Amino acid sequence: MSSSRQKSSSEMLRTLARGARREQTPAEKLLWEMLRDHRCGGLHFRRQKVMGPFRPDFCCREIHLAIEVDGSIHKEKDVQRRDADRQQILEQEFGICFLRLTNEDVLQRPQQTLVHILQATQEEPASAVSDGLSSPLSRLRGRGRAKRGGGGPLKP
Image (cartoon, rainbow, N blue to C red; front, side):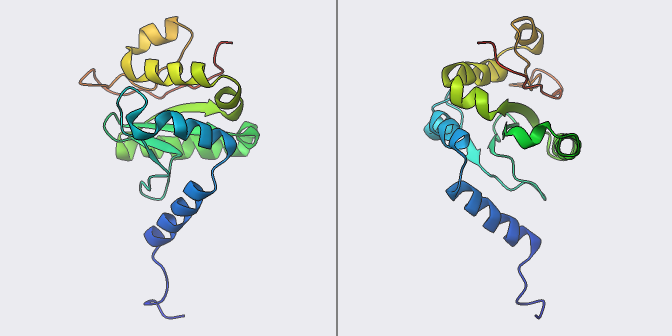
C-alpha cells in the first residue's frame, strides 16, 4: 500500500476515538450523562479527546483535567505500569491532571462520583485530602502547579 493511502497515526487515533465514543462502557455512558452539556459545575468535558498518542476517557481543557474510568483490568500490574507511564507523559507534555475512577464507583455511587469530581475541580488539594478525597488539581484558576491525582475508592 502506498504511503498516500495509509492513514496517518493521528487519523487512526481519531477513528479509534470516534469508535470509543460510540461504544462506551456502561460506566462511561453514565458518567457522560453527568458531564455532558456543562452539567458538572458548568465545565465543558469532551469524550475520547486525542492528545498526542493518547485519548483520555473524558477531559476538560479549561482546567486541564482528565478523568479515566478504570475497569478491573486496570488492577493488573502491567496495566497499572502502562497507565502510570501514560499519565506521566500527559501530565508533563500537556499539563493534564488526572482523576481515576472505577467502574464500580460510577455505577454504584453516581451522585458521590459527581460530588467527587466537583470537589476535585474546586477545592485546594489539602482540603480534598482531609475530606478523604484526593484531588488531581492544585492548579485551578491560578492556584499553582498541578499534582498527580489519586482517584481511590469513594466513601460509601
